[in-house]
Image (cartoon, rainbow over all chains, first blue to last red; front, side, top):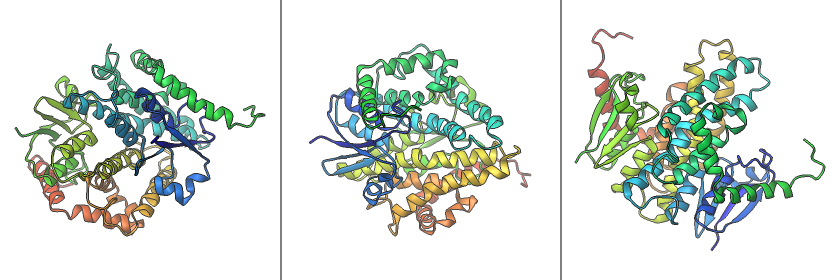
Length: 220
Length: 220
């Protein structure tokens, strides 16, 4: 039985790997688990069939052997719990790795989501230019603390884990903003994640979907 | 061995139970696990001793038997995995409950955090009045979907779980805003959580800390 995930037929990030299916693909690649992908359009997300899988109408979803899941954190935890390679065996070290997944999703990503909202949803508002630096400062405040914790280490704990997979995935959203470059150790940490063969395969897979589903005359 | 958590000596929410130690206290109460609390001041949060427990300089933290954790999601998952009462035994049902913890923290709470930032950090900005309705609409958009999913059910899945504990805890932050009242089934869901004896004990415990550490002549 191969698990099935959903992903955008035409990702709004234009193949930059920032949609959340990339995280799941990366997890599958780290543990050498093949998977199938059902591509969905924006309109599909509002269908009752999709809402039954994810009430918030988003991708990715996961289906396998009678279990359906949404939330990239839950899907990656499920993959990590059922394969070798993403969580340490030692019980305490395992819990610390899971803790970093939560930290990525609840202590770091919310500030990045707010920054994305400011740039995308409020770009036409009269306050946009004056407000964005405040929002960036909130992102910076979290990155300062993460950077201080990481120091010269390669990964958040002793070895690469699902916690790093999630933290790198969250930080990747900042790549085009330049904020990450203010923290050389975090920029290097993200580059270390991107250099993993499993990440590269995941990135290429999502890019192939975007490329093969884009209009030929798309010049944007 | 009793686990030790950290909580604010004087919670900025003035004992309304919205600081994140309440979630942990609630989880402990649901599984009948006694615990100790180390109270910290805002200044303590910046000390290297606290930053070693939580690099983001926040409460709560958890320490027990050689394991230290931060992130309320990770702490509650750890409690739930090691006691009976917060996760179903069936593997698929267990994963669905954990999924709702992630949904609370990453699909619902970020919009509520953005709303809190708008109200607290940007209340003095010239755009504040015009912008808040946009931010409320983002909260509302998530609640609409959650409300549609919950329908007439008591809990998110068949039985109360750590997923409900986390979702109710996240939604409680909206209680004073009035937004929750637009969704009667969600307001009733939150009230159902608050009515649990374990929640009441947790709420009373955090309130007792605030009351006993407040200046006597505090008339606000």
